[in-house]
Amino acid sequence: MAGQEVRAAKRSSPVRMALKVGFSLVLVVGIFYYLLTGVDLGQVWAEIRAMTWREDAILGVVALWNLATYAFVWMSVTPGLSFWRAMVMTQSTTAVTNTVPGGSAIGVGMTYVMLGSWGYSRSRTSVAVLVSGVWNAFAKLGLPVLALALVALQGDASGARVTAALLGIAGLVAAVIVFALMLRSEEQAHRFGVLAGRVASRVLRLVRRPPVHGWELATVKFRARTLELLERGWVPITAATLVSHVSLYLVLLVSLRQVGVSDAEVGWAEVLAVFAFARLATAIPFTPGGAGVVEAVLIGGLVTAGGVRAQVTAAVLVYRVLTWALPILVGVVCYLWWRRRSIAHPEAAPSAAGVEAP
Image (tube, rainbow, N blue to C red; front, side, top):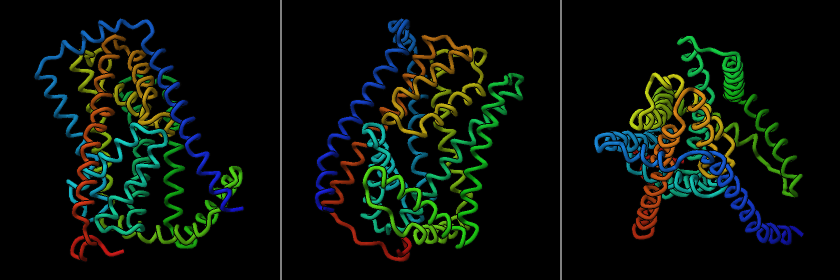
């Protein structure tokens, strides 16, 4: 019976993937059709072409810096990982995330494979994946609060913005509390693992999958490894995460300014607020890389804030080319390079002087 269920799951897997791809395509096409209805695309293209070579060069430098900051985060959570290897891994996984429905999960799997090829154990990789994910979630929850506070200080605090800020604070506090309780003691970590395992098993039962086992042991082990990492590295991890998010925001801000959306039309704090909520909107990946969703939030928010629709649309499209399309191209090259190296020169596990032992 178990073998039959596995074979049935494998047979239905292409169907599920096809449904995901179809849903994503329909959603993206529908969003862009709505966004571009009534917009003079000729004027949008004219705004983009009006940028000078110096403005293009500045945008290119900011975009490349943004790509580099992805590596800084992984270097901080993975002791011994070089900048080049971190770049290869992050760009490869980002390319998958930006193009394939459910690409985030596939990207995590690629992370295990790539780090494993360089001698990192699965447990060390798990800690790096979870800590980077938690810090990323903290940043996504915290940025809207910070942005709305800055907007309020500039005298533009509406009731809706105050409500959004309070909801953001509540979400951030809840996330911090759960994380702190899990790290507080082995007993708390064990209880959290048991509870999480029960919830996951009930969800899996709904889709006729077997229950999970051993989550409480994994949670206790994760707690010990996480404490070890954070005791000596929470400052660089926090700094690298903030630099990565701020750098992504700078690509958007520079795109707006180079296209012609002035600070008088949309202030930098308002841009940060719209950017922060766009990042928050991608917490649930409805489409690969947030395609369509990010554009909808950014264009809608920036136009509401006072930007001219044609200019805002042009700036957002430039921003997405630099932060969504460019990582795909770079990621494909990085993956092919890693694939060729891993086949031609399989590496043995590093010594204790390099990567920590499993």
